[in-house]
Image (cartoon, rainbow, N blue to C red; front, side, top):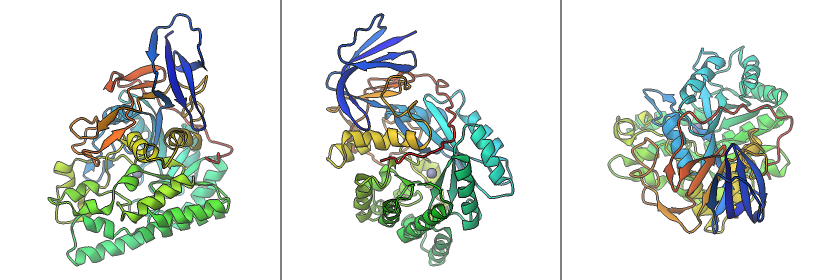
Amino acid sequence: MATTLIKDGTIITASHSFAADLVIKDERIEQIGRNLLVKDVDREIDAAGKYIMPGGIDVHTHLDMPVGDFRSVDTFETGTIAAACGGTTTIIDYAAHEHGELMARGLETWHRRAEGRAVIDYGFHMTLSEFTERTLRDMEQMVNAGVSSFKVFTAYPGRMMLNDASILKILKRSEELGTLVCVHAENGHVIDVLIQEALESGNVAPKYHAITRPSKGEGEAVNRVITLAELAETHLYIVHVSCCEAVEHITRARLKGLPIYAETCPQYLFLSDEYYELPDFKGAKYVMSPPLRDKQHQDGIWHGIQNRMLQVVGTDHCPFHFHGQKDRNQDNFTQIPNGGPGIETRLSLLYTGGVCTGRISLNHFVDLVSTAPARLFGLYPKKGAVAPGSDADLMIVDPRKETVISAATHHSAVDYSLYEGMKVKGVPDCVFSRGKMIIDHGDFIGTPGDGQFIPRPPQSSFPDAD
Ligand SMILES: [Zn+2]
């Protein structure tokens, strides 16, 4: 039995801020209140002037994932250490099955990658890489295995893309099962035509990655999947929203009362397509899908967040080295592995660009990075809450402390940062994972393998994340 008392902090939840002491007993939060009398305290932490918030929940990661000739360079060890250093205490990673492979086999592979390595708790979504006569049946098997969310693509024809008929059937099945379907919404056919035209014209530089994936194509796909969800009378979660068109369709749907949820990621709030023009092929660092957009889209996404049309900020963390991976073939932008790092910087970027600028409140910040994803993905109130009985997944943040983001000091295995040199606040001093301190004054002191798989049951009703 271990008892930790955190004294004199300000507790920030998704709805309230208040001064209180907090007692952790073993893995859980036991008590919250003023001037608590606690016996046999093993450790006391002075949190005066600091915020105590629920640990972040990143529901969009790709650790140790094979992509073509490469695999994303963070294992479940380096990736979750980086996550923890940034204040994230739970991830939901996208497991997948190969074409022709059973979902159950794909899930086993992901369990093997995470077990013994993860330093924080984790769950899995299952990516539906193809639609076969088994798909609808095997979705139930995933639910029984604790995987209650799925991902489908309207992009990458021939590899990942599903047609509207398959997506409609999956949405109906998901409604029966009480699961949530996550969609990568871009128009794959449009992109393929534009890519072919670009290559035929000799337009091979990284910036053509963005030019061939127009925001209108994302808007179209978002509108289409919203319509399919409406026809299936179910809810839907749209991943990595990057543009105004998508926000507009999501807003219209939500104002109609449809249960459409959406996520954006820091790269779409803080970076723009100007980065593709960097010299020496450095634009390749920013090649991800959807691509970075013209700056004007950033305001649209911020407004979507402020109006609570977008509920979640995830990362789509999928890092590849610049040297030897992203820069390997400089004659064809389609050969650049898609994805970038972000698992460590999600909270500090949103805190700095959202809370410090007055765009969002501290409570809204907590909702976006922790509570709303916990509620949508079946983790709440075990995770995403600062309340008696909840897991003691917590971070303590000194609001005065400033840090500079750099690949030289970050914890991901990747060889660059998208945000090199940016000054941020909101990097936690201390992080607890199920009651155990794993970050102490910025240093990782946890143990690979301590992270547990969190089975997520189906849900009979979905929250209005508002
Ligand atoms: Zn992704």
